Image 1: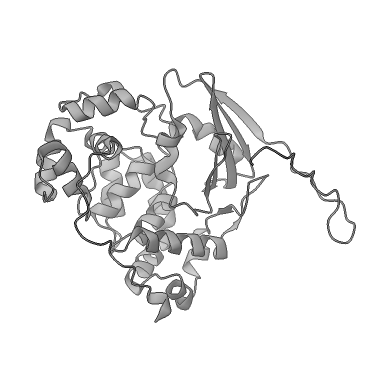
Image 2: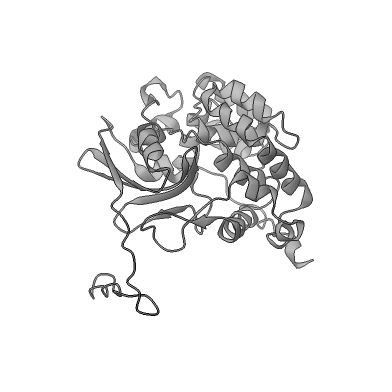
Length: 326
């Protein structure tokens, strides 16, 4: 049925007969990546679940992101067609988003450095030539949802992020689709009442970690200009932020190709099964299997996940705890 009927034109006036203000044209930047680029693969890790208020993919292939940049909130629309990428941005952060657009899409990443030593990875890399590791240059927008994902199911984490951003964030600038929002500012996170964390399904430990992080938000954002290893050291100075959380953060904020995630419930078994036939592999075994890819271990793990070679499920999914119902 999609496309069968022409959409209705927007109403010219709002309630009370006052003309609506049209959105100002956005700033535009066109960039040529100089090679294959798959927007879904590059930007997909920035999406925190299908209902993420800060991320939206559209039927025309465009990707929308709402971010809180150093210069203020901004909305970015990205499309890729005929070998070039077009970015259009709105809001106070528009210029910053367009300046960072090439880096966000992996301009500083060099996939040719990766030398596959397993047939599975060689085949997957050949099938996914558009995979690049992009960097957002924004630390808190990756750190906070990573903290929310600690030791809970993905459904619980995605729900918490969605509820908190929609309730305490602000509408995305420009003609953003649907109910897109920019995540709250650091001070707003710090002022969220304890019961709101509870209603979002976030326990005291994770909420306290977020509160400790936003109190030193400026120092953490400085880590965007550091090397990934140094950035991880700074992040882990915050109580409650460990190796798992710091790796998940710099993979997105820095595009770190070697920041492999340790301490994950599922990843060691997936990598162990794909590369060594051992579905019961632990972190030590996973790191041993990834050792030939030193410097590119995160890319190797991404390719394992993209290969689809995962062990069959042998137990029911972990049931969400649903602490908001207590």
